[in-house]
Image (cartoon, rainbow, N blue to C red; front, side):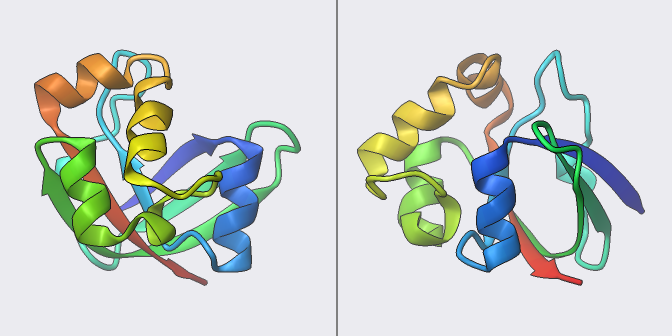
Length: 118
C-alpha cells in the first residue's frame, strides 16, 4: 500500500539527511492513517508542510508501544527525534505538544515506523 503524510520541515529534512530513521505516529482526529496496518514494504510519501517538497520512503518495520517513553527508550531517541535536546523527557514533551497526540497515544498507543529512503 501507499500512504501520503504531512510532515513538518525539521523532521522532513532530518529524514532526508538520514539522521531521523524512525517516524512516530498515532491516529488522531486529524490523521486517520491506519498505522497499525502498515507492513514492511509499504510506501510513504511525506509532504513538507512548509515547502510542499515530497519524499518517498519504504516502511522497514512497524513497532507499537503503549507510550512515547517506551518507544524512545527501545528505538533510541537519536533515531526518532529531529529536535534538540535528544532526551526522552524532551521527546515526550515534543510528542505531547502535537495537536491530538496526547489523547491519541492514550487511546491508541504510538507506532514507531522504520524508514528506508528510496
